Image (cartoon, rainbow, N blue to C red; front, top):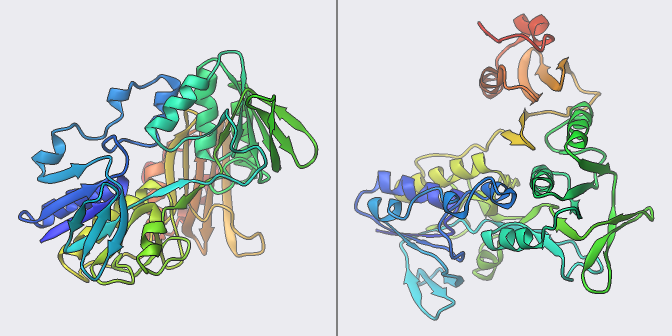
Length: 401
């Protein structure tokens, strides 16, 4: 049996590892267009800031792939799929046959169609090469304008500040991290960012990339304000890389449409990670990509053996060095029957959302105390009614819950 994976990042590498565990005799081939082996894309921020060297980025050393019987071919771009012949055509003119195929082609930064967007001094960070270009352009004492107040945008702003720049973050929505935080949490985060030298502007609709005649010089907002800077970084989301699947005639919506077994509309072809659309949803974050990669591998070896039921949206991360947990329902409809319990401390905020006593969501900013217990409670829909009073205390240790 020959399993071929197109894309060697989170989902693809997780699938390759799982395939080897499930089928010790199978041939496993990973084809990746990028020239570097799998590294943490979030780790690019540490690289830009100078916290990590290039050699610290790969998740596995060079010996991991052969030690696990996995063949990795970097710098290899697949141009088309012949699903009838079960063959991939490559940009170098070669062909690769497969028995089972996993498309883990990931996503690419969205580049908004703004006037001036294609000039020098405009960056989007997705690859190591992108990070190299941004580092080379960073200039101490200058200002960077970051379009997008999501996790990547805020982390990029912090990294450039560590290189001696100032940063202004522009967020179209009415608050930072609109998918992970509520208004109170976002206000606290904005205040912390301000103490780091990062200015955040919300409700900011960008209409044009300004120019000084030679390169980008800032952003013009719809309300007429000019946000000046020596470089512009775009961080306004990603789009699944679906072209390969679409050209092959697979069903494609926002992503490659898959069933509960991560199989596409063509038998023997699976999809996982940022590129997969399951039950109308494209997740675009690491935990679902890992889960989908492993599940797809299971069904490639044992068809129909494990169903993927979807993932609870959960982000456990550090944003500009600040602990953040955002999980489940965090911004319920005010007219709903959800109960909201909040707790506050110096630089800390916790919000727990209950429905008929059952844990449905949580935000924790600036604290990790109780994060493990709350994650478990949300996944299990556990009744937290007996702990209502304790949840209002930011200093509660969660012992006994």
